[in-house]
Amino acid sequence: MHQPTNASGGNSGKACIELIVENAIIQSMRYFNKLPGFIKTPSGIEWILLRKLPLIFAACAAAPVTAILLLYFGNQTLDPEQLKTIYLCLGILFSIFFFVGAAAIGCIVVMIMKGPAYVADPYELPKENKKLEQYPNR
Image 1 (spheres, rainbow, N blue to C red):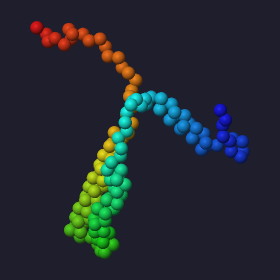
Image 2: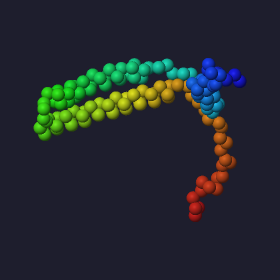
Image 3: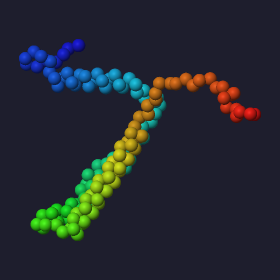
Image 4: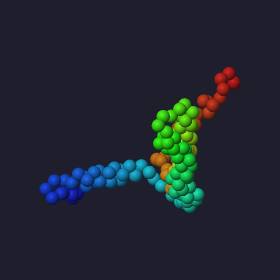
């Protein structure tokens, strides 16, 4: 196998890493056998939603971020009521982040489920023993 070299005659670090990653991918893909005859499901709304999630997050986060920035930069000292407002806006901001993150995870799960089906190596079940299925004292 030809090893890439740099100008000084040594192996190129980036090329070696690429070769290692490529070999690891080839080795790991042997464990995934595609199910024969599987028909891939066409993509649906999950891609549309996943592409719009950054815009949805920015639009929903604009109001709490604006309120926080106005309170911080508009006042020298913050009274307890203003601090309470800032903390509520931070709570809303984190809630928006978690809702958008959950939607993104849902989109990714749907994309994985619609992808090609893989089968594992077959596992032979042990011989069935009817005695094990009977209740005691019968």
